[in-house]
Image (tube, rainbow, N blue to C red; front, side):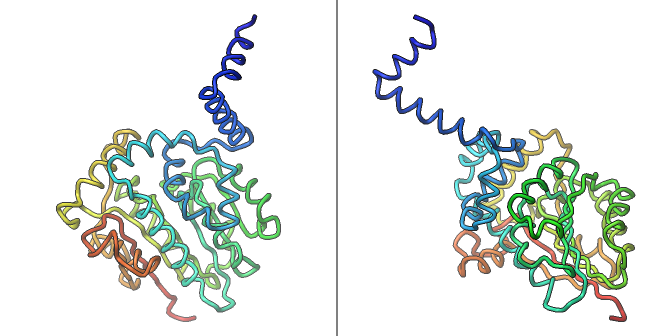
Length: 315
């Protein structure tokens, strides 16, 4: 008897092994035609899974990704904070709704740019808004062509309004060159820039260059700047959660440090012409759930969003 037949007979006559074998087969079938996602990117998608699975398009998109590489990290962070998905879901819900608000209802040409897009399906969440005046650009160093292929399968009628570019965000020359090819008339275009899960990993001088380049590119500019807060702005009994998670992420990704910002530091990065609204996690949770169960006060959270808007002098 061959070794394969031996183990197969053991499975057939052992109910416990039979159940385990079926689970293995299901897992293999789930990932057979799925696109593999790196561990840290898969982690964020796993945290947000409950949110995306309530949406037909995003849920189908999620089913086409192999997120298995993120599970060891998810299990590790679950031991630190089992309700951490609330943080990610609040953030994603807020950003999606804020971008919709910034698009407005007028007919002005609008370009939405997701910097460091990764595997975020923000384009799918907003796809019902896409048309000739509203376009979406996502930029990251890799995987954008594969991601756009998934879009072409899920929203073939809207896919032409989505551009997926591979570029290093910190290389401002390449970034602006890529954007200029998509923004033919800067004076007649509204640009909305999304920075989600990005600012922690870019050092402040590089971020200053990115913001300066974007400011010089177009007059009508809005920036959704999601960021990590300094520990001194976080309630003392909560500090251990972001410290343990982000120090582990820092070491895991071989970064020297994670970059943090206070509201005052973000305002200092921007030109005086920008008006800036600031949202802590308590406001984001209230927007999504109507309560502040996990974040009763501003200092109970460690992620925040600044929404900076600059309008041209003459419309």
